[in-house]
Every structure is written in structure tokens, then in C-alpha cells.
Amino acid sequence: MNLFKRDEDKDIAKNADKTLVVKTSRCPQNHVCPSMRVCPVGALSQKGYKAPTVDKNKCIKCGKCVKFCPMRALALE
Image 1 (spheres, rainbow, N blue to C red):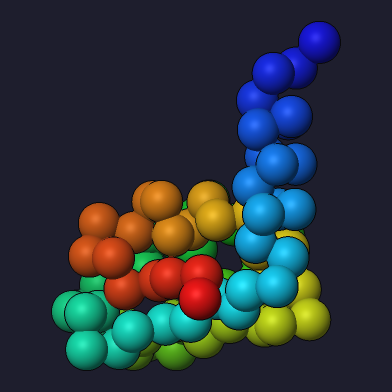
Image 2 (cartoon, helix red, strand yellow):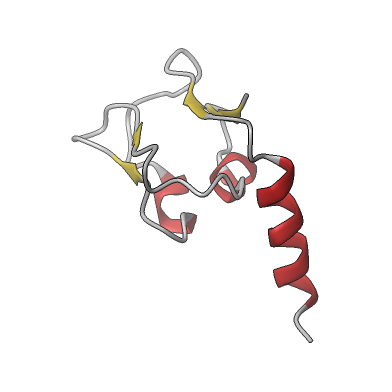
């Protein structure tokens, strides 16, 4: 039994009516976005060092990127 999978499913269900937003004012835009590495579906992309963009069709709203972003520039609202 995978307990972490259950937690992830709960997070996705809890966030179903939310949208992932990028708060560009909180993003330093001087490095590769570390949250892109943790997105299980590749919903985040970045051009150069600009703030990442979200492919809303790919995003499953799991919240992993939100938890991983050290600057809290990503949020599910």
C-alpha cells in the first residue's frame, strides 16, 4: 500500500476547483524554476529565466510545485 499516493489523491481532490497561478512579483526570475522538476505532468514551462507559465490543460492541481517553490511564487487559488 502506498500511503503517499493516497495523500496526493486527497490534495488533487481538495484543489479541484482551484487554479494554479504564478505570482510574478514573488519570482526572482534569475534562475531556472526549481518547481518545474517536481511537476509530474510537465505543466510548467519557462523561457530563459522569466517566471514560469502554466499549461492549464496539463495541470492536475496536485500542489507539488506550490509546496516546492522556495519563494512562494506559485499558488493554488
